[in-house]
Amino acid sequence: LDSMVVEDGYDGAKLGSEMTQEFIDDMIERFKNGKLLAKKYVYQIIIAVKKIVYDEPTMVEVEVPEGVEMTVCGDTHGQYFDLMELFRRNGVPSDKHWYLFNGDFVDRGSWSTEIALLLYAYKWLRPNNFFLNRGNHETDDMNKVYGFEGECKAKYNDRIFRLFSESFSALALATLIGSKYLVLHGGLFSDDKVTLDDIRKLNRHSQRQPGQSGLMMEMLWTDPQDEPGRGPSKRGVGMQFGPDVTKRFCENNGLEAVIRSHEVRMDGYEVQHDGKCITVFSAPRYCDSTENRGAYINIGPDYKLRYEQFDAVPHPNIRPMAYAQSSLMSSLM
Ligand SMILES: O=C(O)c1nn[nH]c1-c1ccccc1
Ligand SMILES: [Mn+2]
Ligand SMILES: [Mn+2]
Ligand SMILES: [Mn+2]
Image (tube, rainbow, N blue to C red; front, side, top):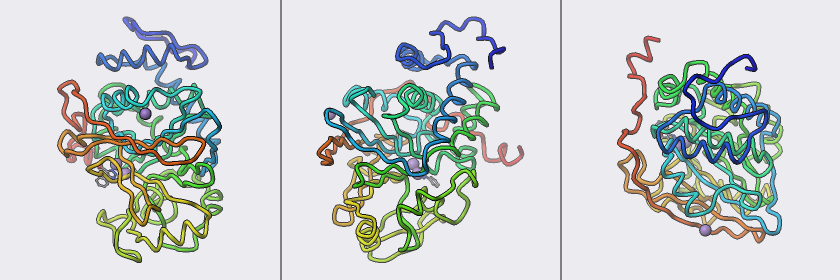
């Protein structure tokens, strides 16, 4: 890395051995204007964040101290200009304004590298008050089909995609807020006996991709259903869990609720299962087609959940999945 030089003509801020707010501010403007980062800096950012997140527990545990507000965001799916709107409405990450992004940062929207690099830059700058959960779109199979792999190759190169892929495998799978709210991308389990300790003890590094079964797959893929019990997944992967499953899990683990994402909601969020299963989704006008709002959840030291909604903003005329490799091409590669 040290021997790598910044390409000629790069007119952005310099990055030294540590991330700075100044670099982030410059990066935000560059991305708004359709510019890229120097590849050397992209390598540095991903490598630094992979190291940070690799050493985090599979379930990160965080309290909200006095004077701090924690915002939980759901899927952003490469919708960079809508993420800018969220930060404009709700405030940017700072020492007093902590953020947790609950997976599916990339794919679908065509500014996935911009979102991934911005979230990673914040994680590097503020490792203890900026949090990232893995989603089912932080996986190779989804990135090949839904645009992130193609976007990395189009804007940067294949090595950068492979570095992102390794960093995605290192991400935490859940975040426990105030011992009250378990935040994870998909949802609960086919086995009633799963406890927070099982999640803590899960060695996420032994399996880079979630596969078709097991705790990691279920945490990234399952969905709530209104009917009691469990049902088949509509996605062909995972399963669906009813209000009784959520009630038992919360009782067994001393939780007030499970906060998850993974599904679009017309209001940007939905409270289900008698208030014990909350979906939050932060990609308004999803894929430029669904007329949904976006939402995020603000949590203060009182641990009350405050829901806020926001609307999509105009973006440059690049369609969703503009860089997705055609399925034929990617199957031939
Ligand atoms: O791309 C999405 O909308 C999405 N977000 N989470 N999971 C999916 C998904 C899963 C399987 C097939 C298509 C989309
Ligand atoms: Mn606000
Ligand atoms: Mn999603
Ligand atoms: Mn998802």
